[in-house]
Image 1: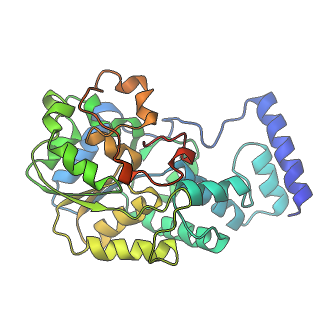
Image 2: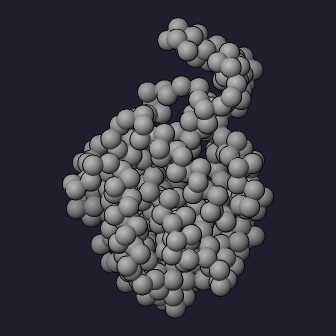
Image 3: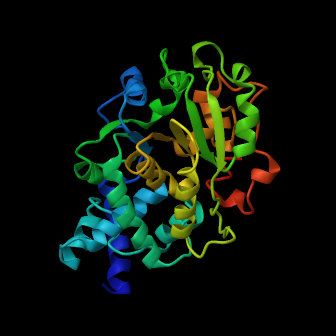
Length: 325
C-alpha cells in the first residue's frame, strides 16, 4: 500500500477515534481476564507447587504491538479491508509504523533495527506463547491473541503483585532453588538479604536458595558485545541457563522474557515466572514508575533502593520516563 493510503488511513483513524470513541488496542484493561485477586495468585502458586513443568508470562507493550502488526500484515484480507479494519479501530496498522519499530528495538531491546529480525521475533513469539500456562493480561489487544492460546489461563496482570493477597503466590518459593534472570543481579542479591525489612508479615519473601544470572542488556540502543543480533544473545542465555541448577526461574529481561520462559518449560522441563519489570518489586528495588503509583505508597520504606549505577545503562532516561531506575 502506498504512503498516501497510509496517510489517509491514519487521518481517518484519528477522526473516527475522536468522534466514535473507539477503543485503543493498547489501553490498560482486564477485559480479557478470567482470574482475579486471590484466585489469580493461586493459579501461579498451584502451578509452581505441581510436579509438572510450568510457565507464567506476560506480553510487554512493545512485543504485543509488534506481534499484532505482524499478524495484520500477514493476514489474508485485501489491502482495502486491512485499512478499513484499522480505520474502524479493530486492528493496528497493517504496515510497520516507525514507532512500532522504535519501541520493539529501543525499549524492548531487539537488535539490530531491521524488519527481518522483527518478523523473526514475531514468529518466535507465535511458537513460544503456546507454551504459556498462565498469562498476566493487561492490554486490550490481547483479545486478538487469546484464540491462539486456547490452553492458557488469562489472569489480571495487577495480581502479579504478591503483596495484594493474603496468601501470596511467592509462598511456593519456600526452600526451592530460585534462579532470577535480570540485569539488576547484584542489587537483587543484596536486597534478598534484607527481605525481612522490605516486606512485612505474610508478604516477606520466604527462605530459598537464590542464584542470579545477569541478563543481556540491549535496550536503549545498547549493543551487547559479542553478539551480532538479538537471537545470538538469546541462544547464549539459553545455553548458560541450561547449566544452572534451579527449580523455579523468575524472569525480568525485556523481550527475552517470554522466549526464555517457554524454553525453561519446554526444553529444561522446569518452572518459570516471567514478571518482566515487576521482578525488581519482589526485592524492593524501586524505579520512577512505582514511586508515583498509589498502589505502592503503603509498602515503600527506607529499605527500598534504586538500582546500582553499574546496573543503569546509557540512555536509560529514554525508556518510559526512566521507569526502572
